[in-house]
Image 1 (cartoon, rainbow, N blue to C red):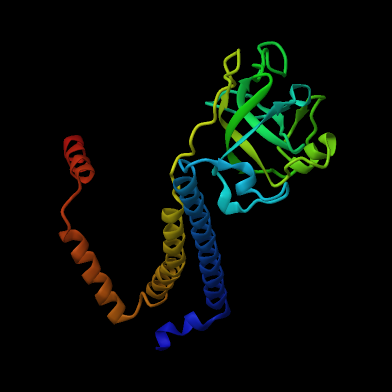
Image 2: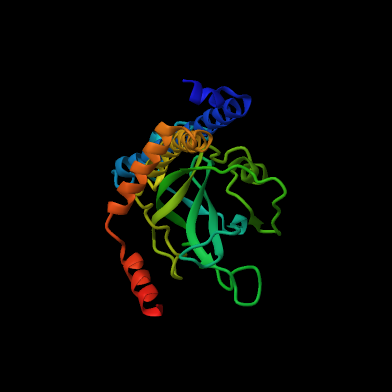
Length: 282
């Protein structure tokens, strides 16, 4: 044990503390990745359970204008009303298929006086200005609408928008402009509307991909990295042991044995090529 006494020095305790902290950091990062995967799996489950479900009346799914539960996301609902075209809004910075553009929010006024925000789809940014060249008009008169419920979004600090545009789908902000009867718990992503619009409707949203991402593999990678820290510590400790005890007969014997075994290993292709080149030079 005297040969290992150097490992009891403060320097090596410092290395050990660093390895422990590194391992703890790796474990925390792995737990974060596990949590991210759980979120992705939960989102996929909601799509699988709700996206293609039978549509129900809006008032049956949401019993008041502020009601919404996260488990209701993607649930199809039906409603009837009249689109308030003059209060239509464009949501900025909404890419679609790699192209910049806007989402079109059109309030739907229903018979009971309540207003439900319908996201009718996406339109591209204009060729010469930071606004669409053309926004398809919604159907006029009474319209039967089917949409999938989506939660509202938070406001982004410092993000502004010109008149007629908004930076996020923040339903309370929209309600402040339209009145107290606006649904603030959720809005709807348009599925269909009848009668059909005269113009082609904005591009419809696509079904979310059921892909949980690489979070699980990343989580296991972080756990492996935690062990690598201790492996590196052990390797450094062994290397210093060999240097400090290089004059010890037993260590010299072990070093000779390692060298003998190394010579017995078959040559790699690169080593064979180098040997041939060296022989040719001679």
